[in-house]
Length: 117
Length: 147
Image (cartoon, rainbow over all chains, first blue to last red; front, side):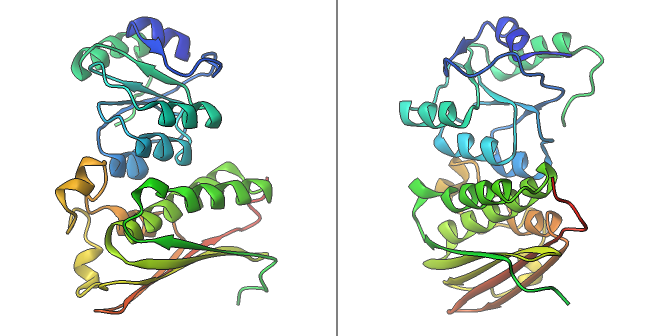
């Protein structure tokens, strides 16, 4: 099973929320910039990859029980949003990789694990 | 027939207040967790509440949201004052949206809110009067789904 620590390494990411645990398992991945899609289709416990970096991403992921968020393409939310995620125990990771590259690297990491849609 | 409410709480939501979007849904989620409901039930109620709250913020002027927990169901009602929905059947169609580009930039307004509320409910009722407002009634049956 893939841990968030594995994800952080694979996407060459930076943890934006020190103190949140990276030992958690994430069985599935969901990639979208549309929070409506996350609310409708993402399974609880999934890792979200997104290029959208606002407070609504944090609220959506907290409400929908997502495991963590990877912000791609160098995007990062503002300090207040990061603090809200930290308070909610939602790990945030930032990577400079573009969405396609980040997803490609995670495909190798997740291997045969069934992915999110 | 549903039993008497054993827990009730009311919240107000202001149209256009994007800064506080999700605050009511977060509170409803916290309350239901504290009341000991299982994760799936809490998640369904949280998502339905959030979609409903976002609809008020995006389209209405103000609303009262009410949470009522009964022995056999969770009921969330949303009464908004707003422009109302002229064609409910059309509004319930996945992908139909009257959202502005600004709403879409925030990641919402894809025309999936109302269908997703219905998806996360066991019973869903919507009534609307153009120029006056919309009322949603979201019910989740418990069937013994306590943690």
